[in-house]
Each structure stands twice: as C-alpha cells, then as structure tokens.
Amino acid sequence: MMDFPQELVVDILSTLLAKSLCRFKCISKSFGTLISDSQFIKTHLTRRKEHNAILFYGSQIFFSTEFDESFDKKVTLKKLDFLSSMWEIVLDSCNGLVLLADKLYKSLILLNPSTRLCKELPSPSFQRKFSYGAVIYGLGYDSSTDDHKIVKIYREYGIISTPRTKKIGVYSIKSGAWSETTYVQSFNTVNGAFRCVFVNGSVHWLAKGGNGSLVIAAFDLAVEKFNYVQPPTALDYRNDTDYKLAVIGGCLCVFDHLSSICGQRDVWVMKEYGIFESWAKISTFHPNTFLIRPMCLLSDGNLLMLLMKRIYKYSKKIMGCKWVVINNKGETVREIVLNANYRKFRPKFTYVESLVSPLPREHNHLTEFEHQFGSFS
Image (tube, rainbow, N blue to C red; front, side):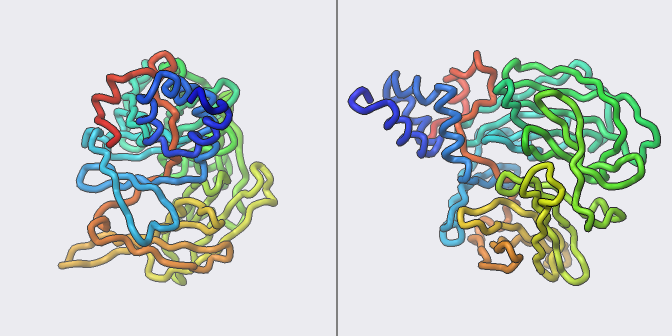
C-alpha cells in the first residue's frame, strides 16, 4: 500500500463490498488500520449508499441479497446463520445497521449484516410493563455527535384532548447506554404503526393530532424534541390504518398499502423535506393485490415495489409475493420473477451495505465477535 498514494487507495477501496473489505483487514496492519478508520467508514458509506440489499425471512432464518439490475436473472440468497432463531421482527434500518426484535418485542439486537457484527441491547432501567405492540421503535443517525441512536416510544391510542407528559427511551451506540427524555404528548399513534422511518435527522411515524387529524410525528435525534410534518391533504384520514411510511431515495414517503376496489395505490414522496408543496404523487394500478410496499429507488430512477396477494391452495390461505419496477408515472416497466426456491421467503426490509459498527467505539476491535459469527467465505 506504501507504493500508492493514500488518496488513490481510499478511492479504490471505498467502492468495494464491505464483505471484501473485512477480508482485506487481515492482509496487513496498514490495511486494517485504514479500513477501521472512522473517516474511511463514512467515505465508504457515502460511495455505497445507492447499493441496496434486501433482508428475507423464512424457516426461522434470515437471508440477504444485494439488489442490482440482474436481480431478475439470478438471485443468490446469503444465509445469516449466525443469528439465533429468536430474532424474527425487523424494526428499522439506518446506514447499514438493522434493528431486530424477538416476537414479543421484549429483546432487541443491533446488527450489521455485511460485517456480521451485532450487539444485543440492554433493557432500559425505566422499562415498564406494556401490552403487545404498545411500543414504537426507531433507528437513526445524529450527525451533531456522530452517533447512531435507537428510540423507544410508548404509545396510547385514541384522541388526546389535553397534552400529557410522557417518557421516551433513547439508546446511544457511542455510549452503549439508555437515557430517558420527558416530553409533552399532544398526539397519539395510529393503530398498526410500530416502527419509525429515519429522514433528515429525525425518526418519523404516523400519529393523530388533538383534533383527530392525521399527522407525521418527528423526533429530532440531535435536540431530542418533537416536531410535525404535514402529510398530503389528499389522504383519507378516516382510514388512517391504510397508510404506512417509508424512505425512498432519501425522501420521506407515505403510501396506501391496503387494497382498493379499483386497484389504485398512491405513493406520495416529499421531494424537499419540510416543504409541503413538494409532495409528489405516483399512482399505480395493481388489481387483485392485497398489500403493496415500496422497497427502494433503483439507479435508473425507477421504483422497486413488492406486491402481495392472497392465494388459496388446498383450502389454505397463503400470501403470494411479486416484484415490479415502476416509473415515475406509475407504469410497470417490468416484473421480477424469483426463483421458485426463494418464493417461500418473505422480503422484510432494505438496508445499505456498509462498515458501520453496532458496537460502542471502544469495543470496535472485537475479533471475538467475528470468530463467533463465522468467516466471510
């Protein structure tokens, strides 16, 4: 490496897969130091941010695959067999980190599928008993402190007529500990919402304001305060459970995920964060489809979407999946047919391939973890 300028080495290595870079760390001490450097990790994340990977789940095992233009021709799923079968729920992802929970939402683990590093999170000291689904989780990045954070929000249903004081848990990866924040709540969570999406320094989720109107609640990770984003006025607020949030191309997105009589589904994208007038609608038509989910923006600007429909086989109701690519007019450009061997696995979440560590800074050199979770062969 000494024979080449440092800038050239960084420029070349930052375009490579995280899996390859993890192998290269063993070549020499200088390579290991460079690849573990926080500035290189940021450079690599920036260069690889448009390269999405998808998590699949089936038979109590997670699988992953990178998405590229050959996805419909050849799909190779990599088994994440180092994970215990107790982890079933994907809550959120940010900068290559994925937040998982057990089926009761009582235990959490933070994972980087690319590096195979993960950390089981401690329970907050202020944790109280709650019923199933009574907590919302979010994962995001605080650029002011260069720290990834997890938020845990206890939710209440119905309309709140008067503001009330509530508490929220914030876990810092840098410190490896939970903290508690008190806030005045004047909104309630929409039924069926249990995860947040991270955009522009804040985690977001759907909620109802004091007058029953639908709002997008936002929690700023830097100042740890709440704010609101006004959703498109065209949404049918009477059917608030029909809507979900997503992040498409780095932009906040709200979409109608349930079926309609005519098969029309609307996907709204806020092209400029916080600017109400920047909401843009993409209408797409998929009759006989039960659910839709926008997955990620492709390099050509088209949108990859997951369609799900009910299929009855031998008097049993099962969910069938299909992938389509649509353009900005909502027209289907092409369909993607998965190999029959993979159709039983349900796609769960997209994430960015990165070197970002889920461990506190002082524990980032844990060869023990890499050995425990296997090699990168």
